[in-house]
Length: 369
Image (cartoon, rainbow, N blue to C red; front, side, top):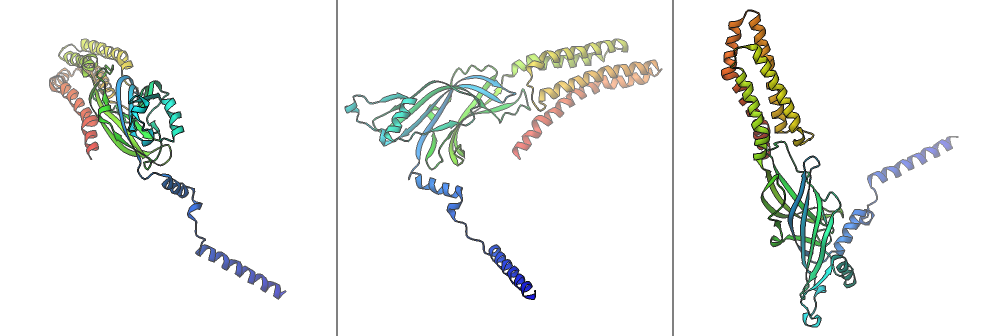
């Protein structure tokens, strides 16, 4: 019996020693066991000595619409790609012409036959199916190729911020990203083929400037790819909003202030109540023209502030009448004099300054910091 116990103890000690050695000295992991490391190695091995340099240009000829709530906009755009491949070179005298042209589909088939690299790319911020009006590829005797396409599509604009509406400035982008990593394709901007058309057809926005940029981002391959962007900034036509929103609001406030100069409190209450109802009706009238977003904009805050001031005006006149009926006529008139001559205008001007501080000054400081 003692020998059996002793054998079991020896076996247990041996198992413990083997486990401890395995923990302290694990087996080395081979690089090929990691699929990502193996894929990186294969890409490095397959990559050419020099990446294909592709010039990219985008010209937006029309803006079909801007959807503020969905944060997207529609465009008609012309995209051009320019690259050089010696496999496309040909003898112009032998062929009898100095340029060859095929549709994009037929050129892709010919490129597969010749073993020519095609700079495949994707419109990164495309949000819907596109309609291609025309797509052709032309190439010259030295192997220079031009890909030209005109397309209608909707682009996502996640950078929209309407908190300052209608005084907001927005940046719009058209982004093209290469399908292959940067070791295979690198984009360069074509300044002569980029820009905005003269008749964009967008009446609400004023385009101020545009720019092109090339950076790197994660592509559909999962690796870093070259990305071209055409960006432009715009602001709204403000005359419409002044005539349609701000002037009526100012007139409603002035009516509320002029009402305070009446001496009869009963008539004040009637006029203040009518002014409040007029504001409510006006608010319903323009509600369809305001963007319905998940956050409060400057115009939303202004309308709420005017509504609160209009309600407070009714309550204030009722309180003065109650004081007058309670025999405190002199006290009511003393309060009313200060409110009428400086209290009401200071309240309205202070409200505007507070909204300006919240939506313009603080946001600007945050952006700078």
